[in-house]
Length: 64
Image (tube, rainbow, N blue to C red; front, side, top):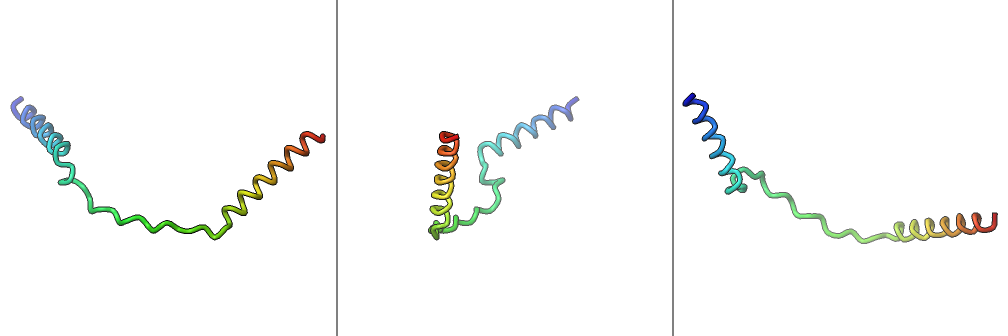
């Protein structure tokens, strides 16, 4: 019975240490994020194309 209580005490101590000292169990720091990429215009072109398709769909619905 004494072994079970010591084991449970050990588990509680480890959990408390993990909560108090998270840096002790952490991995290495993640690399810095990549610099912000500038758009080459394809996203704007695609957005305009989607907008024109929605306008065409609405006109087709209204005319039909």
